[in-house]
Amino acid sequence: MSALYVHVPFCVRKCEYCDFYSEAAGERDIERYLDALEREFRLRHESLSPRTLFIGGGTPTRLSAAQLTRLGQTLRRHVDFARLSEFTVEINPGTLDERKAASLADMGVTRASFGVQSFDAGFLKQLGRVYEVGKAESAVGLARGAGIARISMDLMFALPGQTLEHLREDLRRALVLGSEHLSLYALTYEDDTPLTLALQRGEIEPCPEELEREMFSLAGQTCAASGLQRYEVSNFARPGAECVHNLAYWRQDNWRGYGAGAHGMVEGEISENAADHAAYARCLLEENRLPIVRRERLSPAQRAETLLLMGLRLSEGVELAKFERLSGSPFSAVCVESSRALARRGLLELGETHVRCTDEGLLVLDRVILELASELGAGVAR
Ligand code: SF4
Image (cartoon, rainbow, N blue to C red; front, side):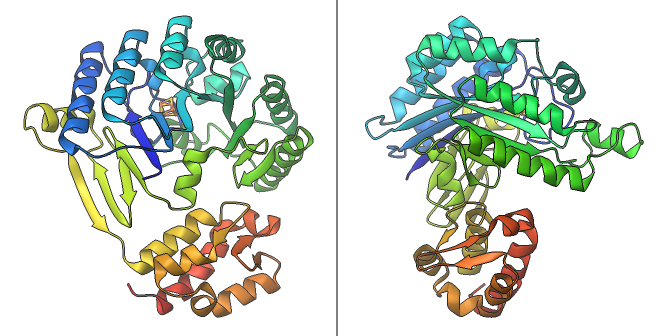
């Protein structure tokens, strides 16, 4: 098992665009959740010696400093840290203070992943983010001051009303802070979020497609000029600063997930916990059983399709040997026509060890995957 994920499903409030599993909750809910998490580790009784540990949310820093320390103690009791090379915590800058930063450092956190989204107060308000002007800068200072040296930031683009200049300024401010890693996500309108409803009512205008493409290119050029290379369609890093934890998902290595709504995948078997913190805690604390709502063994075709879906997002592409190991068939034998056609159109490159998307292919990634997957269905066991 290479990666361990722990989910903290609490947020101060729900952002306008968010459809992740997260909830605003009171102190008692959080304490009970931490009890339940401890019980999940005990009941699963797994031997955990991961290379990477990632606490995500939600907003892990919604927890108090004492609650973070408690979470750290649970992890120390059940996880062997000897092989650990990366320990990331997602941080909403608006929720970090000096005591929490110190708790995170004491837990052994090595990498702070800040959900900045934008430095512009107007866009933060539009997105419904918890923010104070200048808070991102001060939060990075707090993390560094506590000894957490590795900094990553998430930014969003294609926001209603956003221009190239706005994005250029966000990128400049993130890079000036010394981020070694940036994640840049285009805003997507998920079903039934307040932002989507505002769009449907005509209150906001979506970003034109052409502008979104220009923003995508601007992000790549600006990051490259600062020494951050695109290693995944939405992720940029200095060489050696890639997020090793997320690489496990994109490469479809094994990982385990703990907490409400978390899921894991070990050798093609998926297991998923109830995405409801109250049900999760009830199950563990009152019924003394695991809150698993789904267990499924993926077929060779499903594993191959997922590997393409995730792996083609990476600049390195999909390892051919891994494709064959997961699907039982060589890539060149099951995606013959589609891969040739995509290569002829300059969207796909077939190398000795990997198949990867070209830069043009990354722009139409969904289409590339669809074409490969439609041929895959006929060649690999379902
Ligand atoms: S902080 Fe993140 S998880 Fe929480 S509501 Fe906002 S986008 Fe969703």
